[in-house]
Amino acid sequence: MNGKVSISVTVNGQRFDREVEPRQLLVQFIREELILTGTHIGCDTSYCGACTVLFNGEPVKSCTMLAVQADGGEVTTVEGLAQGGKLHPLQESFSEHHALQCGYCTPGMLMSAKYLLDTNPDPSDEEIRKGIQGNLCRCTGYNNIFVAIADAAGKLRGGS
Amino acid sequence: MYPAPFHYHRAHSVSEAVAMLSEIGEGARVLAGGQSLLPILKLRFDEPTDLVDIGRIAGLDRIDDSGDEVTIGALVTHRRIAASPLAAAIPVIGDCANGIADNQVRTRGTIGGSVSSGDPNCDWPALLHTLDARIVTQGPGGSRTLDINGFVADLYQTILQPGEIVTAIRLRKPGAASGGAYCGFKRCSPAYPTVSVGVQLTLKGNKVAAARVAAGSVGFVPARLGEVEAVLQGQAVDAACIQRAAEAAAEAVNPLEDTRGSAAFKRRVTAAMTARAIGIALRRANGETVKNKHEYY
Image 1 (cartoon, each protein chain N blue to C red):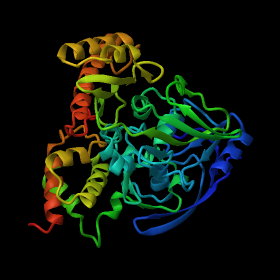
Image 2 (tube, rainbow over the protein chains, first blue to last red):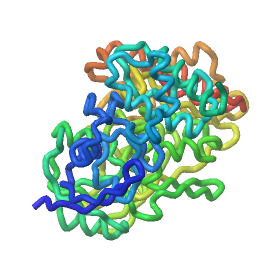
Image 3 (tube, chains in turn purple, cyan):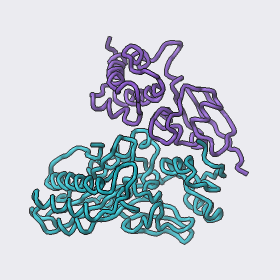
Image 4 (cartoon, each protein chain N blue to C red):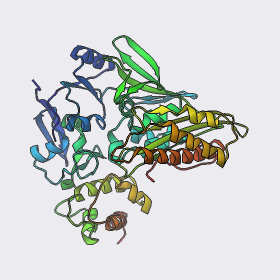
């Protein structure tokens, strides 16, 4: 009954082979099987975006996807942003511009922002706003998040 | 929140999916992108015994443009539609695809799932009424082509038979003198619309030769608003005519009071969205380029 299913998922460049219950959500797989707890569970009803990860390079709400649906795919979580102990420019900019207060939404914000800059290196203010339209923040009022993303975009383009 | 336990089956072809669904019977549900189904399962509004995952079936993720007619595979995601040449060729398709929920949902959600869920809040069913779309299905008895009008029979219920799945959406491209718009009012991006209204107007000279008007989120099913179409039909549409059409729309819909507002409020929003959509549809029918409009206001 409800037999487990074998899946193989590459997370932050490392392949994981696991047997999972079909009903296990991707976010639970990431947090409870792989103990990568940077990805947060917020609303659990597909509104808030705190659980956002990149799946095959595109943003998804990992609370609204089954782990079995991720079989064969590549996931990037917030733990995959920093390289060699050095923060990603987005993380630096979020820190420098006070783009978080409680920090709960931040992992999801960073992943949505990562996708935005991956696909649009020089976004307009409106495009930045739309880029994080699926991520709710209850602390900052968003403005410092917009500023931080614009700043990171500049760094990634090779500016100061 | 965990869904209740279920068995998981991955189908590799449409015929395999139909066979699995037929064999399992009424406890089975179809999983495509999961953006409608998974929240329902997590909230335990439904506890199926089995999920048949059609999300990897090859060939259902294609958009075929044969010139006059377009066939959109059931598994094409909102994001892919938004980025496709189709969205540029038929602006109202771009309006809808770009405005559905948020970036994350558009990555996973599919047009086939939006249509099959029977959810009156989903955007595609309302919009597809304005394009006279047809729904192509495959079931134990073979393939059927169904009119979108009447496809959603009741709240969360379609006329799909047991074991039958949607495989594609087919529609004829609107002509040069035709313009459409899809306008939704949303409290925030991820939310379902409070009200959405789709309009398609085909002009002959300066008069409306054909009108299609449909609304979503304001009743148990997405529905054509024949009363509003009648107001527009044959008219040289001016501000007074738009006002009459908007009031007819407010009368025609049957919204329920919920957390998005009272029935009276939703009638006023329906009037506003109708007026806005007619205005944009007219401008597009007259050859003007108007950017994607189904965003939250």
